[in-house]
Length: 142
Image 1 (cartoon, rainbow, N blue to C red):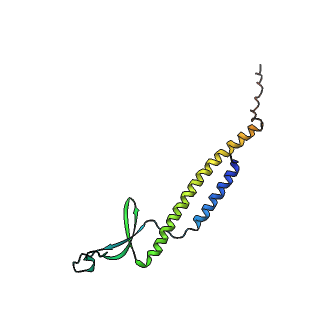
Image 2: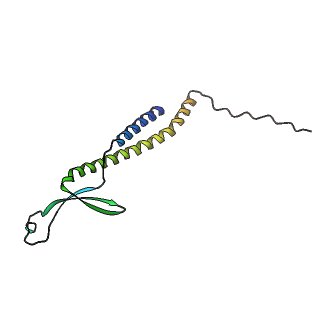
């Protein structure tokens, strides 16, 4: 079984690495980017022809806000930037997930470290903590 103090040090190092990565996260946004094609409804338009994809593409960013789906139109020249922001959001969520996991493991390691140290001391023949000496009973004045 690994030394608890070594385990704590490994987890502290991992936690600090994750925090440093989080500091360097750039702008991000949650959601999904959807490419859409639509038909305008005019019977003489090319989009009404069989096999035609329709007008587009137009891009929508969809995400949930307060339990409702919110859609925002993204201009074609901002699609690549938006893709990068969505990817950065996923990276941020992964870092936070890892930080939460590492922090939980660190909390457990802090609890185990004193237990392991006391067990090791008992194995090596360390003496138990002495109880406080009781004072002698006082004589009652006569």
